[in-house]
Image (cartoon, rainbow, N blue to C red):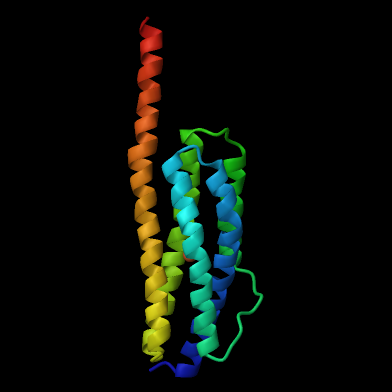
Length: 175
Ligand SMILES: [Fe+2]
C-alpha cells in the first residue's frame, strides 16, 4: 500500500499543473476563437473559454478545501502544446485548413487535460476527498464534451467546406 502522504503529493502536483494549464488556456482561447473561420468553431471556443474560467474557479475551490493556495509553477507540458499549435496556426491564412489546424491543436490540449483530470479525480477518490473528486469529475466531463464537439465540427463543417471547395474547383477545370 502506497503511503497516503506520497499519494497526496502526486495529487497536489497534478492539481498545480492543471491550474497553470487552465490559466494558459484562458489566455490562448480568445486568439483561437478569433482565428476560426467557421462560426461553429468560433462559438465552440467561446463557450469553452466561459467553461474554462469556471474550471479555474473549481480548482481554486479544491485548493481552498485543502487549506492551500495555487502555486505559480508553469505547466511545461501545456506551454509546449500551445506553443506548437501557435506556430502552425500563425503560418496559415484564415481558411477551413486553418480551422483543421486549430482543432488539431485544441484536441491535443483537451486530451492533456482529460488525462490530468482523470488522474486527479481518481487520486481524490483514493484520498477520500469526495467533494474535490466531484468537482474534478465535472470538469473532466466538460473536457470530454469539448473534445467530442471538436470532432463533430471537424467532420461536419470543415470536411463539408473542403468538399465544396474541391467540387467548385472541379467545375472550373471542367468548364
Ligand atoms: Fe479545461
